Amino acid sequence: MESMIGLINLDQERDFLNELTYFRCGAAVPFGGRYRLIDFTLSSMVDAGISEVAIFAPSKYRSLMDHLGSGENWGLARRNGRLFILPPDWHDPTDLSAGDLRYFHNNRDFFARSASAHVLISGSQFLSNDSYQAAFAQHLELDADVTLLSTEMDPTDDHRGCSRLEVDENHNVTALTYEPENRLLFTGAYIIKKRKLLALVDECIARHKQNLFHEGVKGNLHSLRVKHHVQNGYAVFITSIKSYYRQHMNLLNCKNFKELFYQAPRIRTKISNEPPTQYLGQASAQTALVANGCVIEGSVEKSVLFRGVHVHKGSRVKNSIVMQRCIIEEGVYLENVILDKDVTIASGQTLIGSSDKPYVIAKRQTVS
Image (cartoon, rainbow, N blue to C red; front, side, top):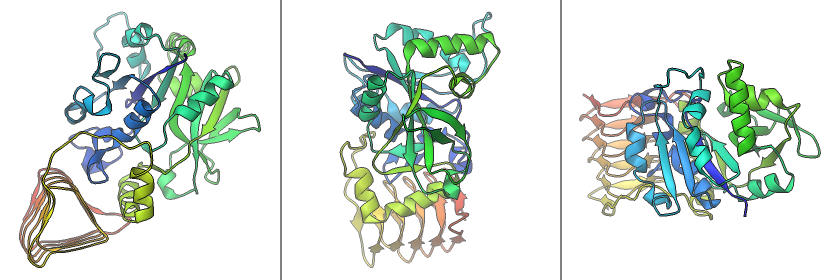
């Protein structure tokens, strides 16, 4: 039976979330009250039957390793399942590779040891609850060398920098462009035959290239059988602070929330046992996503609160994202604000941003 191994390649992802990535890579950024961005890709891989997943982690990966652990929460810490976090290893003096090709070269054993004949490669900036099973079935049926996964979306500013696919009636990819009116966006995920992958790595290194996808796959559309598959289900791109904020606000729509988190397959994440949220005194919460472990004594409106947040009495949190263990002391007003983990806002403070440019506070800060 044909099978795939999974690779989450973080080397080519831009450090796109400013203050939120001061101390962590983008894949480890919290999302949706209790998840991390990487949870969506990893869950989709596991639900497609993938039991071996590697992660190319170039920098700031401590938070990522702490979150993923052994992979147990995704079913990857068992006899027939493994999770490999592969940080940089540049100690081969004969190595001529550069860019993400160096990761492929230095971790060639990961691919060689696996019996799977296909590799699913993805990043972490595309969030979806759709598994890759249908895409893999089409990949096999059409005997494609490479299958690019796409999604159809209305062109918006959230998708700047995302490639668009030009395709024909036979699912062939004829070009990748940045044409803003094209609705067929490349998700950054693709399935490739393992032998083709390794051959492209060798060819690109020999020609002093640095990027497997752009110079190996995109640069060989004329010689490879490159197909495309449209992913279904709820899907978003997180490519900026603006899109990160906007997608959280979109989750406050019950339809969107249920479509992303209550449709099979479910998104998996690190298990954390917290008590139920407490609403004390004159507390109020309207159109809010509040995780467990919070204490609400003030007002929360159109906001997302992660685990363990404490909003003291007389404080108002509006149109904001507040991450784990933040403390909002008495008499605080927050509007269009993003607080990273372990931030304390002292009594009487007022912070106001805008929906296009939220006010962002990096983790472990005190605003007084």
